[in-house]
Image (cartoon, rainbow, N blue to C red; front, side, top):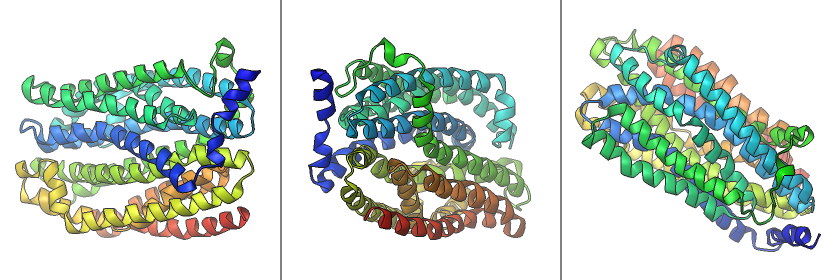
Length: 467
């Protein structure tokens, strides 16, 4: 009993320390962890794009496979973020029994889910690649299949590492969560140029480098989970407790929907790219057919970097907000929400300046020197139009994640689904019928602007409830 009380008191500083200090302490490592996780795919694409024997064909293949890793991430963060919020609230309420059972059940569920998803991917490989635009031309399809197979082989390690990361943060160790992710990314960055340029393994080399990094992150996560501070795992922790699983999955469903709905939007965008690119005077030509798909993939990668910062700010606040809500300190949760919204707006403003002023520098990172003028011109326009509402995008993302920390799953889910499914998919399909590829580009900022109107209403309502 003494050990249990001591464990419960480990996180009492979450209701006593300065809100600004806690936000920096938890958000910064989370931002770095998510940025590094995003860099796995982005680093692959940078090296692929700068390999003359891969170029925009490899870029397009990377874009095709990317949504499939997001599906895996969606399942992982549903388990991990939900468990993080549930454990934080449980510890704040001094309920250590629920906390350790949640962590054990989350680990078992993640392992099972990752193996099932891997099997599904391998069985339906060709159909999945085709669905995400991989048959735009024969060369892109060949590269997509090669990259897809090896990335799929590493899914169990990737999903375990991503699910464990927020759980480790809920245990009061955001720095270790960051360290485990950074370590894997460093391995990927070191091996990518060796496998691609020295061994000339092409898409296979990029994928294997990524998987080896993910294996290291998963191994470090296992090591930590066996040595948690506030939660003590035992055999009983892993026994199925469906009442607890249901609760932490309910808290994590928003993270799942935000990611999986993003996949739906990607599928719509990539299919519209293929459909309306084939009707374009330039991109209907065989040698240029992959350009719209490759370019939008690059734009989405930059967006992923920015949104990783936005999500990191909000996700880093989950343990702090959850603990304070559990301890009935709504005043501190409200103050933290204010800090978060201001930070998200600042992140979006900086990103907006970069895409509007320096688009050529951005595309240069992804091998534009080896491409045609059509590639460069379309890329510049895509950055400036597609991402012109970045401030709204970051505030929207931060809002629904923080609502998740407050236990407001319904409001959080509403914003997420509206943005990605109703607006994201709907406008991506509708607007190109009037304006072709240009309609596809404007669908993204219009979706963000309309979603912000809904988010603003819910923000105001939440503030009143936290009075």
